[in-house]
Amino acid sequence: MPESTPPESTLPASPDAASDDALAALAAQIRIWARELGFQQAGIADTELSQAEARLQQWLAAGYQADMDWMAAHGTKRSRPAELEPGTLRVISVRMDYLPPDTAPVKLLKQGEKAYISRYALGRDYHKVIRKRLAQLATRIRAAAPSSGLGRAFVDSAPVMEKPLAAKAGLGWQGKHTLILNQQAGSWFFLGEIYTDLPLPVDTPVENKCGACKACITVCPTDAIVAPYQLDARRCISWLTIENKGDIPEPLRSMMGNRVFGCDDCQLMCPWNRFARHSGEADFQPRHSLDQADLVTLFNWSEATFLENTAGSPIRRTGYTGWLRNIAVGLGNGPASDAAIAALKARLDFPSAMVVRHVQWALDKLERPRV
Image (cartoon, rainbow, N blue to C red):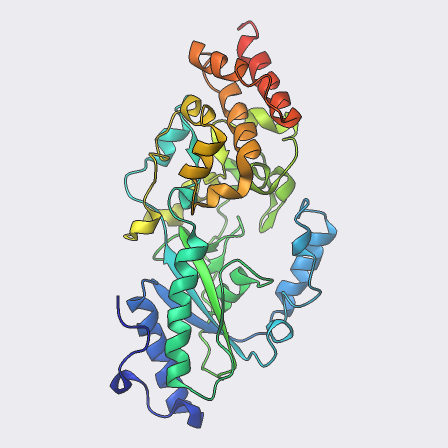
């Protein structure tokens, strides 16, 4: 890994002079530094997000945010970067591929006794990985432009409209499933941002190339993509299994299959992901065989084992009771094996009433006479 602060000879000349040439040179250098730090692409956007702000307000008014109250918090700071960080003129947006090789996600979804965990969550928490790299990038920028008073980095951790900003920065377009799509790399990547007061030249957004395709809408197991570019989180398996702290609505449980943490179906079906590239980041490689684990094995984890095996993992976000709730649903949707039924019965006296309700649902389903 290169040093956090590059040698003086590599810095563009006099970016603080704010000449067009100096700023363009710094922008080009930022892209080089980003690649050196493991990002596949970096782009620069201005802060005008009025259209995205209007779409956000419509989405909130429809109640599609479920109980994610933070989406409505902070007033207009989310859509007006200078209100969050005064002085912000530009946003540097980066992306980092995360898809591990050889995880066979489509095959796994057809194996009812296995647990499907969203590919982004198989390894280390991306927040930690990307935040460290962004901090190094910000350090280099400050060294090149000492008069800059800004350089705050964000990784899905503050009121930031990361997808509209990424689209403005030319990293891709926002697809009908609402994720950013890149013509050369699909959508299997994380995003991060640096807010800066440097008036860097901005990139040109790319053309939306979804066309008439509706593959992501058609494949969604719970019909959560209610219209192109509109996602109802209340039906989304990612919200149901991660952010949701209550019961999973019964009508949706059978639709979830073996998806116990997140869902990738809209990405798996997207034609643009035939161009996706596997990640070489060691931190994003699967831990504890989570890319091929049996549901029964995971359901039998004690809380201590759960905490040990999910240390530094995004899976921690759902908590132990949420983990058991999700896997109970997965077991109920899987084969009625003796091992699955025994594992579920062993949890009937679990302290959480929510977990017990899902366990009972699964047992009722597995022990129901088959026609």
